[in-house]
Length: 493
Ligand SMILES: *[C@@H]1O[C@H](CO)[C@@H](O)[C@H](O)[C@H]1NC(C)=O
Ligand SMILES: *[C@@H]1O[C@H](CO)[C@@H](O)[C@H](O)[C@H]1NC(C)=O
Image 1 (cartoon, helix red, strand yellow):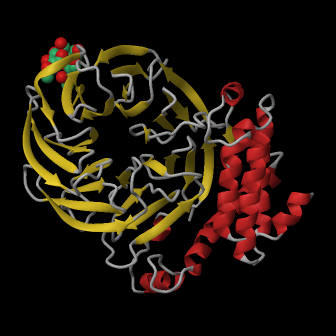
Image 2 (cartoon, rainbow, N blue to C red; image 1 turned 120 degrees about the vertical axis):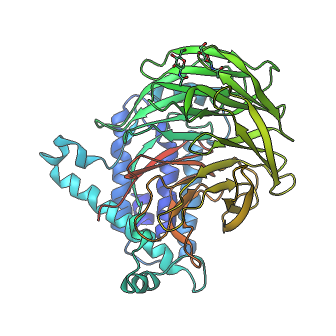
Image 3 (tube, rainbow, N blue to C red; image 1 turned 30 degrees about the horizontal axis):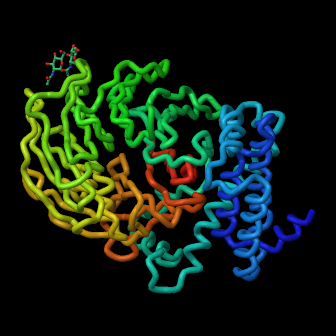
């Protein structure tokens, strides 16, 4: 009763999404023995959010509500950031069932007998989209967020709107099985709209499926003796390789979750990143904390001769170009190296080095050979702890980089990642998506000279570390430092 009177006094979109985020974070602690109530609870929250969004009240009041609510939840369930053994065990018992949100359309039962609920859920998608727009409209002129007027004029000028194309407002599902430990990486499987995986600092990986509903954790990959730092799907999705601070590379069977092989780092150092050679999935490249890069033949578990090299710092990020001929590797001293990869032997040859910013970690590198239909130039997208997302042009066959442009984001220290949108757009423009330390997911149009932000998703309760699109771009997944994974559904036009 007391809450609902406060609720009706609130309304600002951004704060409401934050309230939902706080509640979603605590959801794993609620009714551990009756997980179905948790789903209902979040649904009801979402509904209240819809009902109360229309009132226009003073922002300070709403923020105060958010603060109070966080404090009350922390009193009731304990603060989420510190790990007490009591809470760890109570969470574990409640981790098995996940909260299903807003997936009524795919659930035949919901469409029949409970059809009224479906309309509620649809309404809340639209609402969240409206709210996102409202957030833009609140911005003062001259800020980086496009106004609806500017968008309309672009549309009238015959310019197709990328922002409509990337209106990812509605939350489709929230996974909370890793709550309390950061989820540094997540990735949808290849050519499978509903399969994705993530790794966690809790030492496990999860493979999750979104269809048939309800969304669920299909299998948990257990075995690493320390935080899992990175992983990659093989092209046929039958294998996942992962790296851990325990100093091992593990190869997993994704069907049954069995660990097929464990390859120990010869230097016994922490392994920080890995990637498949795109043309030969028998080979993976692994980066460690002693500055080394190593090609490993996963069918034998052996190092490939001539397949190692040294960087200037801890190896944090790796990316091949699509043909697998150039490999870029980034370290924590601010350097990106390019290597030529010899397909026949697996040998690496160091080619170029670029110092992005002395001492700033290169957290994420993604390569793309065609950026859009209009701009075919090979490009590299880089997160480098410089409060900017950087886009480089690849100017030769040795992987030399030239800065093309940058986009402001909040990024100073965390391992924030970004991606190119997978579909090559037949509209104007091209889109990139990045996490950010302010808890938002940002979409930028790399072809747009001014007002490059096309969308911004709010809902995470901590820095967003990774983002991933499924193959047809109908869903976007994002993961954060509090262990929450949000699946966002694209608005249906
Ligand atoms: C990978 O290794 C297996 C044997 O372990 C071999 O049959 C297969 O042809 C190899 N694939 C490539 C692309 O070299
Ligand atoms: C990897 O190991 C397989 C199986 O022994 C072998 O056939 C293949 O040639 C090796 N690849 C490289 C690049 O060493």
